[in-house]
Length: 210
Length: 252
Image 1 (cartoon, helix red, strand yellow):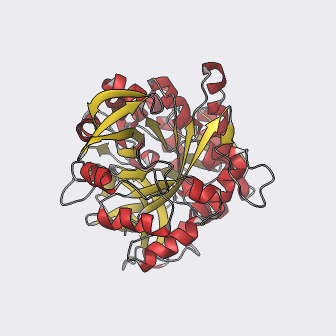
Image 2 (cartoon, chains in turn cyan, red):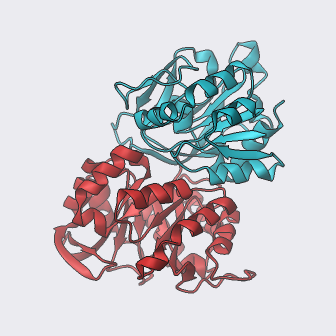
């Protein structure tokens, strides 16, 4: 069973339906026990960083998410849901993130014709690093061609402290981490549930993780 | 590389597609979900749904329609038409729209744009501007589906909307809309020159050259079109293949 965490911030229907295409059993939920009991969990999200953290706290979901991750179960954050996995964001001075990934979330600087938000289809470049884990490739990118197009719609992006967690980068006024991965935790700045066949393949890879 | 987008637009009334979509092989060309699926298969970059339903009661079912669309296509789409407050926006985003476009309500209450951008982020707030020429390089903003002139200058309003926090401008030329004579290059250029957020050109697409003109002669990020796609004069893919030949970066 995959828990899709519904904390009132953003679209859950597309990701739910997409996971079901690959025979995943899903539950849309804001119950702590569901998050703890499910084998996998997805944290979507649209909105402001501090509002989202407030909702997670108010609904008692911070600890269940951390426990789920600590238990080594696969976890996927999408867009704002990915940003919340970091320690902090330039968007929110006060609110602290979940801190599962070290580092913060920063804003694109509009300069030299760089339009902000970063909006549309851009390429996901697979990260080839010397680290053994990265050489084997992120399991979510299995059978995904290098430089595949995925859909972005955001003004902020993650800046991981530990560069080893970067599993994919995208060029936009320089390159930024568009896919992060640390053991059982994955975070996508793009929207796999809105990225047509490539995005569906990435979600299928998540469903098939053991 | 970030690519330029091609966006088919569907007008919805009482949860049905209007302005006749003539797709061959569609069982029900009036069903927004069926039409959306067809454009998903053509790999359109985004879709825009504009709800032109007059009655408030019937508009409530729009949220259910958006949920149904989100369950059936795995691509981004924008929903607009009659959005007047924060709860409308929240409901549509939670139902699965990537972005919402705000027109009349934004002009009447610019603070709505600012509040929405703070609450949901600029990236999902599109300011839709309907503009009509009043003189050389001058355009006036119209609201209420193009029925009501506002006296407001379109270029100034675009700047203001961007400053308020809109993340994108959907710019429709009322002079060119429906003519199939091409996009309003002067208008589009006037707006893209003064804002640093993405701009979607809309109104006038009739030929392949019109798309390349818009992308090569202005700094627009996307082109929106309706009848050229609905009547299968061209598929989205044909437009993109043409653009690629002309050196415009597209996703193929």
